[in-house]
Structure formats: C-alpha cells, structure tokens
Image (cartoon, rainbow, N blue to C red; front, side, top):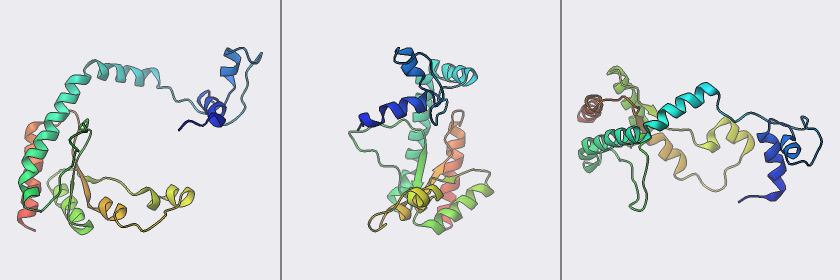
Length: 185
C-alpha cells in the first residue's frame, strides 16, 4: 500500500538524494543534495543489452518454456515414483520459466545430488536461504511463530541449469544424470 507520508522520501531517494523533482515542478528555485539517494537507471550499455533482448523477447520466452517443459516431462517419472517433487503451477497462474527446480527428500539428499551432478560437470545450486536465516534478516527482521516449513522446504530445493542457449540435448543429459543418481540411491 502506498503511504503518502513517504512519497517525498522516495522521490528524493530516486533523484540521487536531491530535491530535483521539486525544482522541475517549480516548487524551489534550485535543487541540492538533501538525503540518501542512488541512481536506479540502467547505464547506456545495459540499456543496449536490454533493448537487444526485448526485440527477441518472445523467442527467448518460447525457448525457455520449451526447456522448462522438457525438464518437467523427463523428470515426471521420478516424481511419480515419489523420489522428487516437481514445480507446482496452479491452474489459474502462468510462469515465465525463469528457473526449473526440483525438491529432494531432505538437505543431505540435495547435497549428495549437487555433488553427483558436479562430478558430471553440471552446475546445480540450492535456491535460497530463508530471509529470517540471512545475515540481514537476523539484523533487521524477526521471525514470528514456529518455522515449520520455510527452512525445511528451502533445504530441499535444487535449481537445475536454465539459461538461454541451453540445448535440448543438455536438458536430456542433465535429466539422465538426475535419474542415474536416483537409481543408485
């Protein structure tokens, strides 16, 4: 929810710590540095990279969805056997295939799978540290209630490689290696 009491602070932050917007609105005769701020605009080089990607955004999206769907299709037998869990997308939702993850039984299994995949030259990584366990979360936040799911679920998540340029053959190789791991465990 937007809080009108913070509009001016947010505007100053966006304007690199200055009251420049007030100057452009004619509310002051000159602007100056008045508080913390930063530049959130992309550099020209970053904007050029973004523009190039935006011109082929549909192609990139379709390619990523194809790889995501291939992962899902090839790993479904392991999920049906109860060895892993696959991503759940509610029927009323869509996703952009920015990552593909699986859930292992527990932290130990995840770590063993990461090591196994690394031995096959596959970089699979865990997804995240829960905010309440992060250094900033411990410093700035607080956790209320009992942590029944957050930490446990984060310890099970494993991200498989997903990047533009990943070939269908690589997805097949990765999923074959995941299947090989579970055949031996």
